[in-house]
Image (cartoon, rainbow, N blue to C red):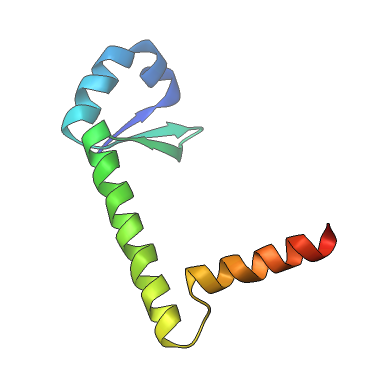
Length: 84
């Protein structure tokens, strides 16, 4: 992974974008990493992975007896209706 300073990122933005399309780029500020720039394709992959993780957690929670999505919505609606 490439690492550059925020000053360099600002000065060489075009090069930053080109590099980020090939591999993640860490941008530092005061020698500390503050952000990582990734391609839009990689970002979409990461979002899809995150969705899979949350779906797996939800399935596990349902197996353990937690409320399903429908049950959760019914509880929330009941609370909202009681407040109205």
